[in-house]
Image 1: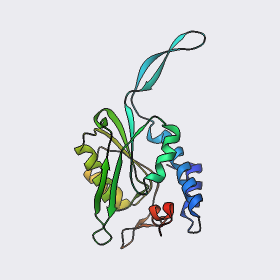
Image 2: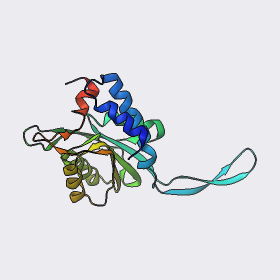
Image 3: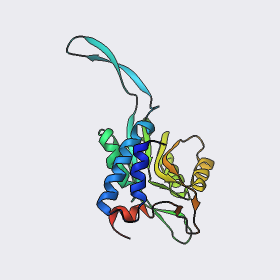
Image 4: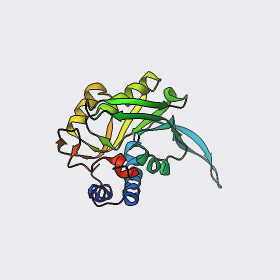
Length: 202
């Protein structure tokens, strides 16, 4: 998403001296700015609408929306999406990266019982190795999700390739595609560990 407001906010996030409160606010603003692009092709249906002057027609979303933050860092995206999608339901998926294998390890999954009838938007600010996104989608599909898309802040080419190999039909929306991963699986130039910066646990 090459939008000047998104890119300006992202530059502020990348700065190592960006304090936690500012980091959270910038991430929330970027998430809100991304919503129109992430939802631009959602299906709609025609409905009647009575204005103060006459009866007319309009549209509404054809399916409910389920926002699915991948814990922890995905929580930083949630409020920004809620700002424009206040009636969305929320599913939570907890996946912790094993720092030795770099593979995601699930520790918590809680979803609403409407996945099959909903548009499910997976929120995970960092698409690094792609393992967490692949695993999150796999779990959601097992639970019945059909209509999925992924929104992230920064993606590495390796993560995109891994995700597209596993789920070629699911679109990825990202604010930036960075250069590469380092030997520890972190995105370069990246912005560090988004979860640690969000919650002050670095």
